[in-house]
Length: 236
Image 1 (cartoon, rainbow, N blue to C red):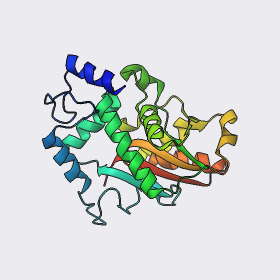
Image 2 (spheres, helix red, strand yellow):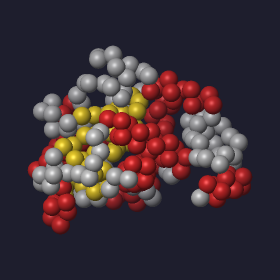
Image 3 (tube, rainbow, N blue to C red):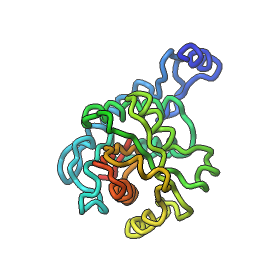
Image 4 (spheres, rainbow, N blue to C red):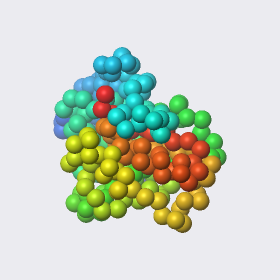
């Protein structure tokens, strides 16, 4: 697979996922040029204005998790600045193999660092709406979660389904909780798979926490023993 990627990059030279600059072909999937890699690393060290910790250690609870339904949040960066917003937009709207691989690899490292992974651990993701899949051609959460699974060997639970509803990004913060509650459900045939499982939820970005809280409540109602959320970015 590495050789195939290398020869494909010779024919279609890779571009930096952040600035768009052409890069030299490489045997590994590399999504950042040297300059933007430094920007990415610096973004990971940005501090929350409230708790003064970086994204991976921020202890501030999102708006909708005041009751502690989600056991904990970990993110790679804060959802600040045009560069990070551009990367999240790229994840949502297209398939940049190198960017997906980098994000999944770093999320996998975070999962293995902060979770006690065992036979009861299971990855999950919020299924994308059919309208968005039709529009962009991908379910970005599913792709990201499957790639994290490849790095961690943790199985994936595909049972968090999306029914027709408004897109969260189109709504105000106060409307997101009600919309998320209407939008997600678990099929009856999948409910028994959750009993005793520790769910590790993979997402691209956490803003108000509405989606994570609804999915956590659904899983815990069916006997999940825990629910922690890992995302690329998070609104501070």
